[in-house]
Amino acid sequence: QVQLVESGGGLVQAGGSLRLSCAASGRTFSNMGWFRQAPGKEREFVAAISWGGGHTYYADSVKDRFTVSGDNAKITVYLQMNSLKPEDTAVYYCAAKATLHGIYDYWGQGTQVTVSS
Image 1 (tube, rainbow, N blue to C red):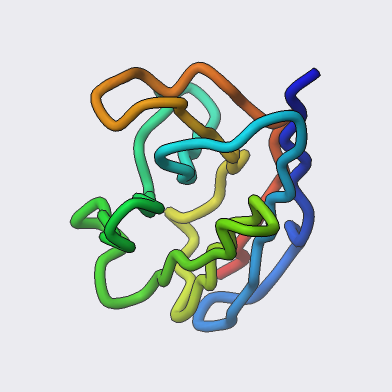
Image 2 (image 1 turned 30 degrees about the vertical axis):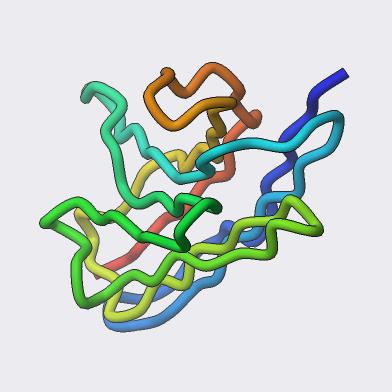
């Protein structure tokens, strides 16, 4: 059974930092990443890492503030979030896909990140 378990969310003041972790089990993946969903908005892509080449991908809104990293052997992915803004407030979801050109079809339960102004 595949499981993705996030941790590390919480409440932080604007300008602060948080580090999210996602530990997976049950299989290996091609890519792992992070999405987020704010109240009243659609889920959006945040960042991802491709294990094959170590390539990383970021949404423009988080580029230069967030860093995605991980350990393929441990099937763990991290999201270091710096210079947080109130608009970063959302539920953050870890996601994974089995193949490079597939869809993200494995999801964690989500972790709340709240940034106060």
